[in-house]
Length: 363
Image (cartoon, rainbow, N blue to C red):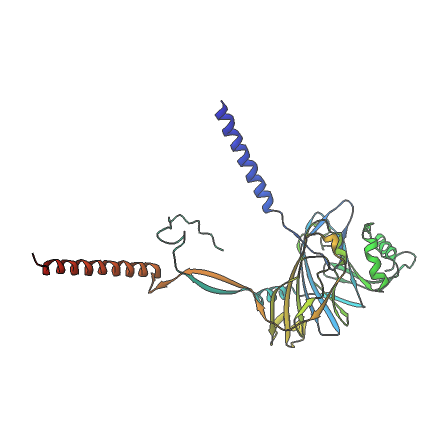
């Protein structure tokens, strides 16, 4: 009986472990909605699975192209992005991100090893699995412009107080969370403006889901800045992915409360074409791709300000390990065979010499 209970306990423990493993595989860090805040109605929810951003800066003008991948049951949402100057908003080209991904793909190199491993003969069992690697009431908000761009209702706003922005959102059917209001104060103090966007699918009963059409936001800026402060409100770890097109390699001045930013690509693009040419005007540019983790978003202290550094190229290298062979035969086998032949030859030689000495010796 005790053996039966022990067996059941082990089976239950195994099932629990498998369930935990499956749940763990579904958990991943949220991507930073660094450029703004996503707001929805109290009865609905929306989550940002990933935010991809490409930034072009020529020393005077900054263009941010971003694409959200969202999930949830919200049929409408509002999104707020602070900008240092008056902004122009248009739709972006989805192919831009595919072009950057292709351009920055890791370099693949072969790397040989001598001794056989578990997947090589004679250790290979042949059982491989085949896997491979309008203004708000009271005039509190100034509406600079408003237009409809695909699924987006875009308003460019000025505000002298965070409550003014809350009033505009309320007039348009959205409630500004109380915890967001104080985070807008630094932007108000610096006299920044806002891009407020309503995300609404053309079919009103369809929830916002999947990859949304990219937005392209352009504004004047004497320095390359990427707003991140509003991400401090996130409740889960955040990851920022940023592709920068500028005259030189660009890196953040500080970590602003996250881990050290990692450069995953740095290289010159002498002849941009396609969507890259559309973003850069066809001029040669330097592409820098950054990735940064924020394990504790509440520690984010400011926006990212990026500076020019040396144009050191970098590309991630992925090695494909291959068994060293000579004319298709494993080198270790040839070496082992040659060694065995040498030992056998030496043994024969020593044996023959010993026999000759024995014959030549007097009786």
